[in-house]
Length: 341
Image (cartoon, rainbow, N blue to C red; front, side, top):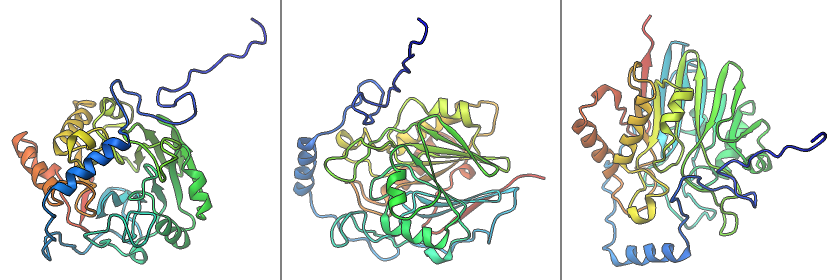
């Protein structure tokens, strides 16, 4: 019919009311009653003993200043989901978090068990910042303001709905993307990809903004930052569209109890399954290097903070995967790869 307006199908991850949700069958958000059940279970357990000094050491970083060469890829784990990536000549921060507490309150909420391993003033020039979602352990107001004052030319990449908050905190350059959208920043190709999680900063805004992972291609390198996610069916598709990857950053902590956390966080076994999906996406390419993140910095859930890397290392060996492809990092440690030739 002439002049008719053609409706565009609503993406599966967007609800009719404009909020976002995980689109996969059987995915269900936990309610207040289940949160209270978890809290009751935690109170019934013996108190967690304090960490002994040196249990989670910090080491000196060795990233390149001011930038790496095009043939170099480095990853420096600052803590939790915060990593400084040098993807050739591009300096990228993932989910920057430098505050003492992952909370809207300065005196309550999850506190760091390890301080940030790199000082804000010690960072090289930051070209790009990747934000995966709006939870307090991944998006921190004081950190954002501190970075913006020091690196005013940085481009911030955010999922739908998050740019408004970043601009309120003074960020000048924000690119906001939906799942599967791509953008180009200077010479880098950046893609927003699916994650299985949720968003909220208050009891009333759940799902108002999107959550995601990111891929970046620059100087011949390809990197995938999964953000904060449970296992989901799209890892293989992410690799097919945007791989093969040289480096993948997958979360491996904050997973117990599974009945509550299994729908939002991966454990080491889930992360290995996701890693397999990412590797199978390009069977003729070398398997990517894995940097495990989202453990050992905040005590968010019930597993011991030192358990994720130990479990991952054991499962990695059980799977007979190459030891050099697992970059288990101490806080502050820099890993690097050089492209042959």
